[in-house]
Image 1: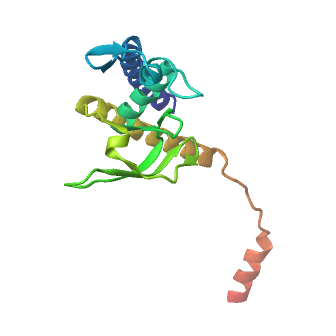
Image 2: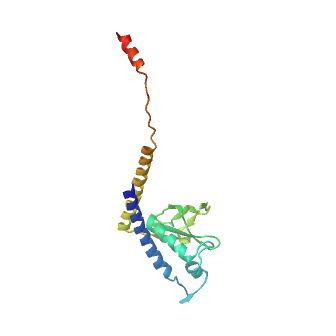
Image 3: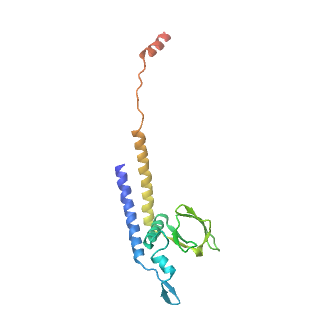
Amino acid sequence: IEEQSKKVALKKHAIDSVIGFIARTIIMSEFRVKKNKEYIRDETYYRFNVKPNINQSASALWKDVIHKLVYDGECLIIKTDTNDLLVAEDYERVEYAVYQDKFKNVVVKDYQFDKTFFRDEVMFLEYGNEKLSTLIDGLFNDYGELFGRIVEFQLRKNQIRATVDIDSTFRKRIDDDEE
């Protein structure tokens, strides 16, 4: 179990390091809004660079975005009626060939939106890094092995063991009946 735990911890640390590096790079960037060939600092600029919603800073939002991208390979950012930007934890994507994709059953922090979001209303980001995906898949396999070993160890540790003394006269009586 200890060996498996070390393996899981090392892989998790490697993945978290990659997420941290990418997130810091994004956080250090400035998103600029251009209107009529001039850069402006409007609400969109403020949402992307300072405070995307009432509960998060821009750096926290972008860290969540990178985390979702690396672990899930995609990330959905929605805009609420109050213009807050939120990272969806769960959603159902309906893809179309000719029409816009739809995102239904969008969930953010245990709140499910009744609204269906269309592709032009959201930011849908996809990320595909085969080497990193292999590392993450390996991490989840290692987690499975670790939990399996923990359960196996606990079952073995908590086994009920007992001895039963049986009166030997019972055995003797059977032998006497056969004669």
